[in-house]
Amino acid sequence: MFLNLSHLSVRYPGAERPAVDGVSLGLEAGDIGVLIGPSGCGKTTLLRAVAGLERANSGQVILSKEVVSSADHHIAAEKRRIGMVFQDYALFPHLNIGRNVGFGIEHLPRAARAARVDEVLTLVGLEGMQARYPHELSGGQQQRVALARALAPEPRLLLLDEPFSNLDVDLRERLAHEVRGILKAAGATALLVTHDQLEAFAIGDVIGVMHEGHLHQWDDAYALYHRPATRFVAEFIGHGVFAPATIAVVNNEVSVHTALGALQDMDECPLPTAYDSGLCDVLLRADDIVHDDHAPVKAQIVRKAFRGSEFLYTLQLASGETVMTHVPSHHNHEVGEWIGIRAEVDHVVTFARGGNDESTPAPGVAVHTEGV
Image (cartoon, rainbow, N blue to C red; front, side, top):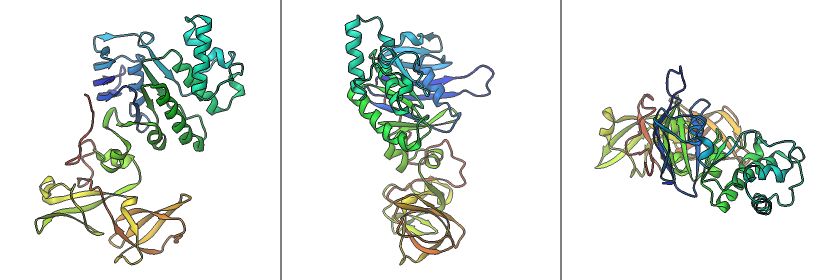
Protein backbone atom coordinates (compact mmCIF):
# COMPACT_ATOMS: atom_id res chain seq x y z
CA MET A 1 0.00 0.00 0.00
CA PHE A 2 1.25 3.48 -0.89
CA LEU A 3 -0.73 5.17 1.89
CA ASN A 4 -1.42 3.14 5.02
CA LEU A 5 -3.25 4.35 8.12
CA SER A 6 -3.03 1.97 11.05
CA HIS A 7 -5.33 2.51 14.07
CA LEU A 8 -4.92 6.28 13.72
CA SER A 9 -6.46 8.44 16.46
CA VAL A 10 -6.51 12.22 16.81
CA ARG A 11 -7.97 13.93 19.88
CA TYR A 12 -8.21 17.68 20.29
CA PRO A 13 -7.34 19.08 23.75
CA GLY A 14 -10.37 19.12 26.03
CA ALA A 15 -12.52 17.04 23.67
CA GLU A 16 -14.71 14.32 25.17
CA ARG A 17 -13.90 11.84 22.41
CA PRO A 18 -11.32 11.56 19.62
CA ALA A 19 -12.11 13.36 16.36
CA VAL A 20 -10.55 10.35 14.61
CA ASP A 21 -10.82 7.09 16.51
CA GLY A 22 -8.74 4.05 15.53
CA VAL A 23 -9.02 4.44 11.75
CA SER A 24 -7.23 1.96 9.50
CA LEU A 25 -7.22 2.09 5.70
CA GLY A 26 -4.94 1.53 2.73
CA LEU A 27 -4.65 3.30 -0.62
CA GLU A 28 -2.75 1.91 -3.59
CA ALA A 29 -0.43 4.09 -5.69
CA GLY A 30 -2.39 5.79 -8.47
CA ASP A 31 -5.76 5.28 -6.78
CA ILE A 32 -8.22 7.95 -5.63
CA GLY A 33 -9.71 7.53 -2.17
CA VAL A 34 -12.68 9.52 -0.90
CA LEU A 35 -13.89 10.12 2.67
CA ILE A 36 -17.56 10.94 3.13
CA GLY A 37 -19.79 11.36 6.15
CA PRO A 38 -21.93 13.93 7.97
CA SER A 39 -20.48 17.18 9.32
CA GLY A 40 -18.28 16.60 12.35
CA CYS A 41 -17.59 12.94 11.55
CA GLY A 42 -13.80 13.42 11.52
CA LYS A 43 -13.08 13.21 7.80
CA THR A 44 -11.34 16.60 7.52
CA THR A 45 -9.35 15.96 10.71
CA LEU A 46 -8.16 12.68 9.21
CA LEU A 47 -7.11 14.48 6.03
CA ARG A 48 -5.22 17.09 8.08
CA ALA A 49 -3.49 14.33 10.04
CA VAL A 50 -2.29 12.75 6.79
CA ALA A 51 -1.07 16.17 5.66
CA GLY A 52 0.82 16.70 8.90
CA LEU A 53 -1.35 19.60 10.05
CA GLU A 54 -2.65 17.60 13.04
CA ARG A 55 -0.64 15.31 15.31
CA ALA A 56 -1.54 11.68 15.88
CA ASN A 57 -2.29 10.64 19.47
CA SER A 58 -1.91 6.98 18.57
CA GLY A 59 -1.54 4.79 15.51
CA GLN A 60 0.49 5.54 12.40
CA VAL A 61 0.39 7.24 9.02
CA ILE A 62 2.72 5.47 6.58
CA LEU A 63 3.42 7.12 3.22
CA SER A 64 5.43 5.21 0.64
CA LYS A 65 6.72 2.87 3.40
CA GLU A 66 7.84 5.85 5.52
CA VAL A 67 6.25 6.49 8.91
CA VAL A 68 5.32 10.16 8.79
CA SER A 69 3.05 10.26 11.87
CA SER A 70 2.81 8.31 15.11
CA ALA A 71 2.37 9.09 18.79
CA ASP A 72 6.10 9.85 19.19
CA HIS A 73 7.13 10.76 15.63
CA HIS A 74 5.92 13.61 13.45
CA ILE A 75 7.35 14.75 10.13
CA ALA A 76 6.41 18.37 9.42
CA ALA A 77 3.84 19.00 6.72
CA GLU A 78 6.25 20.85 4.45
CA LYS A 79 8.61 17.86 4.42
CA ARG A 80 6.04 15.23 3.42
CA ARG A 81 5.85 16.15 -0.30
CA ILE A 82 2.07 16.29 -0.12
CA GLY A 83 0.00 18.64 -2.27
CA MET A 84 -3.26 20.15 -1.05
CA VAL A 85 -6.30 21.65 -2.78
CA PHE A 86 -8.44 23.64 -0.36
CA GLN A 87 -12.16 24.35 -0.33
CA ASP A 88 -11.65 28.02 -1.30
CA TYR A 89 -8.82 27.25 -3.79
CA ALA A 90 -6.51 29.73 -1.94
CA LEU A 91 -5.29 31.35 -5.16
CA PHE A 92 -3.27 34.55 -4.95
CA PRO A 93 -5.47 37.26 -6.50
CA HIS A 94 -2.53 39.56 -7.30
CA LEU A 95 -0.64 36.88 -9.26
CA ASN A 96 -1.53 35.73 -12.75
CA ILE A 97 -2.33 32.07 -13.42
CA GLY A 98 1.20 31.21 -14.52
CA ARG A 99 2.73 32.61 -11.33
CA ASN A 100 0.03 31.00 -9.17
CA VAL A 101 0.79 27.58 -10.65
CA GLY A 102 4.55 28.12 -10.47
CA PHE A 103 4.49 29.32 -6.85
CA GLY A 104 5.59 25.99 -5.36
CA ILE A 105 8.35 25.29 -7.89
CA GLU A 106 10.32 28.54 -7.70
CA HIS A 107 13.45 26.53 -6.90
CA LEU A 108 13.53 25.31 -10.52
CA PRO A 109 15.42 27.22 -13.21
CA ARG A 110 13.20 29.68 -15.07
CA ALA A 111 12.95 27.60 -18.26
CA ALA A 112 12.17 24.38 -16.37
CA ARG A 113 9.60 26.18 -14.23
CA ALA A 114 7.86 27.65 -17.27
CA ALA A 115 7.83 24.25 -18.98
CA ARG A 116 6.27 22.60 -15.92
CA VAL A 117 3.63 25.33 -15.64
CA ASP A 118 2.74 24.84 -19.31
CA GLU A 119 2.59 21.07 -18.80
CA VAL A 120 0.19 21.07 -15.84
CA LEU A 121 -2.03 23.83 -17.30
CA THR A 122 -2.36 21.72 -20.45
CA LEU A 123 -3.17 18.71 -18.26
CA VAL A 124 -6.07 20.55 -16.62
CA GLY A 125 -7.32 22.04 -19.90
CA LEU A 126 -6.18 25.64 -19.29
CA GLU A 127 -3.31 25.94 -21.75
CA GLY A 128 -2.58 29.48 -22.88
CA MET A 129 -4.13 31.11 -19.78
CA GLN A 130 -0.89 31.95 -17.97
CA ALA A 131 -1.44 35.71 -18.25
CA ARG A 132 -5.02 35.68 -16.94
CA TYR A 133 -5.88 36.48 -13.31
CA PRO A 134 -8.08 34.42 -10.94
CA HIS A 135 -10.96 36.93 -10.98
CA GLU A 136 -11.17 36.54 -14.77
CA LEU A 137 -11.93 32.81 -14.49
CA SER A 138 -15.07 30.88 -13.62
CA GLY A 139 -15.29 28.87 -10.40
CA GLY A 140 -14.62 25.64 -12.26
CA GLN A 141 -11.55 27.14 -13.96
CA GLN A 142 -10.22 28.45 -10.63
CA GLN A 143 -10.60 24.96 -9.19
CA ARG A 144 -8.51 23.59 -12.06
CA VAL A 145 -5.83 26.23 -11.43
CA ALA A 146 -5.67 25.15 -7.79
CA LEU A 147 -5.34 21.54 -8.94
CA ALA A 148 -2.59 22.45 -11.41
CA ARG A 149 -0.69 24.34 -8.69
CA ALA A 150 -0.90 21.32 -6.36
CA LEU A 151 0.31 18.96 -9.11
CA ALA A 152 3.17 21.17 -10.30
CA PRO A 153 5.74 20.06 -7.63
CA GLU A 154 4.93 16.38 -8.40
CA PRO A 155 3.78 15.51 -4.86
CA ARG A 156 3.82 11.94 -3.57
CA LEU A 157 0.19 12.35 -2.50
CA LEU A 158 -2.53 14.86 -3.31
CA LEU A 159 -5.15 15.84 -0.70
CA LEU A 160 -8.37 17.63 -1.64
CA ASP A 161 -10.65 19.12 1.02
CA GLU A 162 -14.23 19.66 -0.27
CA PRO A 163 -12.85 20.89 -3.61
CA PHE A 164 -16.25 21.28 -5.31
CA SER A 165 -18.31 22.75 -2.47
CA ASN A 166 -18.13 26.32 -3.80
CA LEU A 167 -19.49 25.32 -7.20
CA ASP A 168 -23.05 25.08 -8.50
CA VAL A 169 -24.71 21.74 -7.78
CA ASP A 170 -25.11 20.95 -11.49
CA LEU A 171 -21.39 21.53 -12.06
CA ARG A 172 -20.06 19.41 -9.19
CA GLU A 173 -20.60 15.91 -10.54
CA ARG A 174 -19.40 16.83 -14.04
CA LEU A 175 -16.27 18.47 -12.66
CA ALA A 176 -15.66 15.48 -10.39
CA HIS A 177 -15.54 13.27 -13.49
CA GLU A 178 -13.16 15.73 -15.16
CA VAL A 179 -10.88 15.92 -12.11
CA ARG A 180 -10.79 12.13 -11.95
CA GLY A 181 -9.58 12.09 -15.56
CA ILE A 182 -6.91 14.70 -14.76
CA LEU A 183 -5.65 12.79 -11.72
CA LYS A 184 -5.54 9.52 -13.64
CA ALA A 185 -3.68 11.20 -16.53
CA ALA A 186 -1.17 12.57 -14.02
CA GLY A 187 -0.76 9.18 -12.32
CA ALA A 188 -1.51 10.88 -9.01
CA THR A 189 -2.45 9.18 -5.76
CA ALA A 190 -5.15 11.25 -4.08
CA LEU A 191 -7.35 11.36 -0.99
CA LEU A 192 -10.42 13.60 -1.12
CA VAL A 193 -13.00 14.71 1.45
CA THR A 194 -16.60 15.47 0.49
CA HIS A 195 -20.09 15.28 1.94
CA ASP A 196 -21.67 14.65 -1.47
CA GLN A 197 -22.26 11.01 -2.43
CA LEU A 198 -22.51 11.72 -6.17
CA GLU A 199 -19.12 13.44 -6.09
CA ALA A 200 -17.66 10.49 -4.19
CA PHE A 201 -19.08 7.96 -6.64
CA ALA A 202 -17.91 10.00 -9.64
CA ILE A 203 -14.29 10.40 -8.55
CA GLY A 204 -13.38 7.63 -6.11
CA ASP A 205 -11.81 4.21 -6.69
CA VAL A 206 -12.42 3.45 -3.03
CA ILE A 207 -14.70 5.31 -0.61
CA GLY A 208 -14.71 5.47 3.18
CA VAL A 209 -17.83 6.25 5.20
CA MET A 210 -17.10 7.91 8.55
CA HIS A 211 -19.29 8.62 11.56
CA GLU A 212 -18.30 10.01 14.98
CA GLY A 213 -14.61 9.46 14.29
CA HIS A 214 -14.97 5.84 13.17
CA LEU A 215 -14.45 4.45 9.68
CA HIS A 216 -17.44 2.18 9.10
CA GLN A 217 -16.47 0.86 5.67
CA TRP A 218 -13.68 1.37 3.13
CA ASP A 219 -14.81 -0.09 -0.17
CA ASP A 220 -15.90 0.66 -3.73
CA ALA A 221 -19.19 2.41 -4.43
CA TYR A 222 -20.97 -0.78 -5.54
CA ALA A 223 -20.19 -2.56 -2.28
CA LEU A 224 -21.17 0.43 -0.15
CA TYR A 225 -24.57 0.52 -1.82
CA HIS A 226 -25.31 -3.19 -2.16
CA ARG A 227 -23.31 -4.64 0.74
CA PRO A 228 -23.17 -1.99 3.49
CA ALA A 229 -21.14 -3.25 6.42
CA THR A 230 -23.09 -1.38 9.11
CA ARG A 231 -26.54 0.03 9.58
CA PHE A 232 -25.13 3.56 9.44
CA VAL A 233 -23.62 2.96 5.99
CA ALA A 234 -26.92 1.45 4.81
CA GLU A 235 -28.78 4.57 5.99
CA PHE A 236 -26.22 7.09 4.74
CA ILE A 237 -25.77 5.70 1.22
CA GLY A 238 -28.71 5.84 -1.18
CA HIS A 239 -32.44 5.57 -0.51
CA GLY A 240 -33.98 2.73 1.44
CA VAL A 241 -35.77 1.56 4.55
CA PHE A 242 -35.38 -1.22 7.11
CA ALA A 243 -38.29 -3.63 7.10
CA PRO A 244 -39.00 -6.18 9.87
CA ALA A 245 -38.29 -9.69 8.63
CA THR A 246 -37.95 -13.25 9.83
CA ILE A 247 -35.33 -15.65 8.52
CA ALA A 248 -36.45 -19.26 8.39
CA VAL A 249 -35.48 -22.58 6.80
CA VAL A 250 -38.21 -24.05 4.65
CA ASN A 251 -37.59 -27.33 2.80
CA ASN A 252 -33.87 -27.00 3.58
CA GLU A 253 -33.78 -23.56 1.94
CA VAL A 254 -33.25 -20.25 3.73
CA SER A 255 -36.00 -17.70 3.17
CA VAL A 256 -36.70 -14.18 4.41
CA HIS A 257 -40.32 -13.40 5.21
CA THR A 258 -41.47 -9.76 5.01
CA ALA A 259 -44.74 -7.86 4.64
CA LEU A 260 -44.09 -8.04 0.88
CA GLY A 261 -43.91 -11.81 1.01
CA ALA A 262 -40.96 -14.18 0.99
CA LEU A 263 -37.85 -12.86 -0.73
CA GLN A 264 -36.32 -15.12 -3.38
CA ASP A 265 -32.73 -16.00 -4.42
CA MET A 266 -31.35 -16.01 -0.89
CA ASP A 267 -27.77 -17.15 -1.66
CA GLU A 268 -26.30 -14.30 0.41
CA CYS A 269 -28.74 -14.56 3.30
CA PRO A 270 -27.44 -15.40 6.80
CA LEU A 271 -28.84 -18.41 8.62
CA PRO A 272 -31.69 -17.95 11.10
CA THR A 273 -29.24 -18.59 13.95
CA ALA A 274 -27.53 -15.26 13.14
CA TYR A 275 -30.34 -13.51 15.00
CA ASP A 276 -32.49 -14.29 18.02
CA SER A 277 -35.41 -16.39 16.74
CA GLY A 278 -34.43 -15.37 13.21
CA LEU A 279 -35.88 -11.87 13.78
CA CYS A 280 -34.07 -9.12 11.92
CA ASP A 281 -34.46 -6.00 9.79
CA VAL A 282 -33.84 -6.33 6.05
CA LEU A 283 -32.62 -3.39 3.98
CA LEU A 284 -34.96 -2.60 1.10
CA ARG A 285 -33.53 -0.12 -1.38
CA ALA A 286 -35.81 1.91 -3.63
CA ASP A 287 -34.58 -0.16 -6.58
CA ASP A 288 -35.51 -3.38 -4.74
CA ILE A 289 -39.21 -2.46 -4.98
CA VAL A 290 -40.87 -2.75 -8.39
CA HIS A 291 -44.14 -1.10 -9.41
CA ASP A 292 -46.39 -3.87 -10.74
CA ASP A 293 -50.12 -3.25 -11.17
CA HIS A 294 -50.74 -7.01 -11.16
CA ALA A 295 -48.92 -7.66 -7.90
CA PRO A 296 -51.09 -8.88 -5.02
CA VAL A 297 -49.44 -6.48 -2.53
CA LYS A 298 -50.77 -2.91 -2.67
CA ALA A 299 -49.30 0.24 -1.11
CA GLN A 300 -50.46 3.82 -0.84
CA ILE A 301 -48.34 6.70 -2.14
CA VAL A 302 -47.69 9.06 0.78
CA ARG A 303 -44.97 11.17 -0.83
CA LYS A 304 -43.55 11.68 -4.32
CA ALA A 305 -40.40 13.42 -5.51
CA PHE A 306 -39.89 14.21 -9.20
CA ARG A 307 -36.36 13.36 -10.38
CA GLY A 308 -36.72 14.06 -14.10
CA SER A 309 -36.57 10.58 -15.59
CA GLU A 310 -38.24 9.03 -12.54
CA PHE A 311 -40.30 9.57 -9.43
CA LEU A 312 -39.14 8.51 -5.98
CA TYR A 313 -42.32 7.30 -4.30
CA THR A 314 -42.60 6.76 -0.56
CA LEU A 315 -45.26 4.10 0.01
CA GLN A 316 -47.14 2.77 3.01
CA LEU A 317 -48.41 -0.80 3.17
CA ALA A 318 -51.76 -1.70 4.73
CA SER A 319 -49.75 -3.08 7.67
CA GLY A 320 -48.32 0.42 8.27
CA GLU A 321 -44.77 -0.32 7.09
CA THR A 322 -43.04 2.11 4.73
CA VAL A 323 -41.03 1.34 1.59
CA MET A 324 -39.63 3.42 -1.27
CA THR A 325 -39.46 2.81 -5.00
CA HIS A 326 -38.13 4.41 -8.18
CA VAL A 327 -40.76 4.57 -10.92
CA PRO A 328 -40.31 5.95 -14.47
CA SER A 329 -41.74 9.47 -14.55
CA HIS A 330 -44.39 8.64 -17.15
CA HIS A 331 -46.03 6.60 -14.35
CA ASN A 332 -47.36 9.76 -12.73
CA HIS A 333 -49.52 8.58 -9.84
CA GLU A 334 -51.10 10.89 -7.31
CA VAL A 335 -50.38 11.04 -3.58
CA GLY A 336 -53.01 8.91 -1.86
CA GLU A 337 -53.30 6.48 -4.76
CA TRP A 338 -52.79 2.74 -4.19
CA ILE A 339 -50.43 0.87 -6.52
CA GLY A 340 -49.20 -2.72 -6.78
CA ILE A 341 -45.63 -3.50 -5.78
CA ARG A 342 -43.36 -6.50 -5.45
CA ALA A 343 -39.86 -7.05 -4.12
CA GLU A 344 -36.91 -7.99 -6.35
CA VAL A 345 -33.94 -8.17 -3.98
CA ASP A 346 -30.62 -9.28 -5.46
CA HIS A 347 -28.51 -8.46 -2.39
CA VAL A 348 -29.96 -9.45 0.97
CA VAL A 349 -28.63 -7.19 3.71
CA THR A 350 -29.87 -7.81 7.24
CA PHE A 351 -29.27 -6.22 10.63
CA ALA A 352 -30.38 -6.93 14.17
CA ARG A 353 -33.96 -5.94 14.87
CA GLY A 354 -34.39 -2.45 16.26
CA GLY A 355 -31.30 -0.64 15.04
CA ASN A 356 -28.92 -1.25 17.94
CA ASP A 357 -26.07 -2.56 15.79
CA GLU A 358 -25.04 0.74 14.16
CA SER A 359 -21.31 0.05 14.30
CA THR A 360 -21.41 -3.74 13.99
CA PRO A 361 -21.12 -5.39 10.56
CA ALA A 362 -24.09 -7.47 9.50
CA PRO A 363 -23.50 -11.24 9.44
CA GLY A 364 -21.61 -12.16 6.30
CA VAL A 365 -20.61 -8.56 5.55
CA ALA A 366 -17.02 -7.47 6.09
CA VAL A 367 -15.58 -4.02 6.68
CA HIS A 368 -12.92 -3.88 3.96
CA THR A 369 -9.66 -2.21 4.94
CA GLU A 370 -7.32 -3.73 2.38
CA GLY A 371 -3.64 -3.61 3.16
CA VAL A 372 -4.07 -2.76 6.83
